[in-house]
Image (cartoon, rainbow, N blue to C red):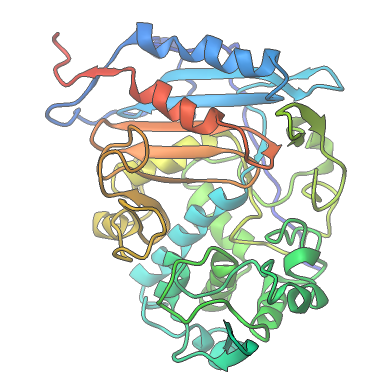
Length: 437
């Protein structure tokens, strides 16, 4: 059995405090050489940004949040970093900037990047059929419902790599009422935690995805935005096209070159205390510790360590993921390490699906949700992009202002309003396009 990825790290020697304009205290893992601020760049008001401190603490004090790490970069520099609350409240372990989080669907952007690296090398193409790499996808079916009931019909065309990247493959997480029983019988959908969870499977991801191909999907390829296992399928494509397991490819080609030493799929048992605890949001908004197992704490330490889910399986820190996002913001390069070409990053961060996205004014590129109209996503600028994770974390990149923002939490379900309010409090601190005023 293949040995799983092991995270390594260097702890930064400074306290868990907000950093506003204190460049001497910026951790080395995030310090950048710096690029000129774009013309008309926004100025950050330290006074307005400081509103984040009491905002975050209030959620902890009211037992609506176990803990969080907030990180904001401006033109590559840390302008705010704050750890609040508890990594494990019952054990009395405080949250730290170096705490490790289950990033769930934040894994998708990293997997998308890996696939596009292979595209740039000619190993895959966006219009390739998935069946070229996973033969079981040569003939797929779609579940349809009409007055006579539920019918399984053949897909009108094969699913392509582009469909996986844009969530237009028609592949869901198998929890819909018409297909849930079929997915559950194959160990997916309702049998996979909350639908997307595969970390407890004692099989390679390609075995899981080949089994998925035998199940009905929920829309015809290219015709609808359907959120599901598409990026897990893409993870298998990466394994086949590169000739190496997904965890090795990501480690060798992305996380190690970028200095993301705390980003991996499974955590060594001796480092379990760095993994933050998952809490459940009750109907009254109050918290309870999540149980062990697929619907709670997961198997990210003691699991089989064989199933590398490109759609939802990774662990990371705010600092590590901040480096990844800053690389994307800079057009594919960071600290002299080029991961992608600028044109490829433009594909990732530009709407590729027209009006198919269910939210008006929003789109989806090759790995990121995009904001195409001001006001469609709070104070997001046009051209901003990002996504979130099932454990509650959220991130946005706003190229117009040079801002990268992240809020890392571990809370399910995602019924708290802290994510949208956090974004608002960051953006309201951008007060003027002229830094001399």
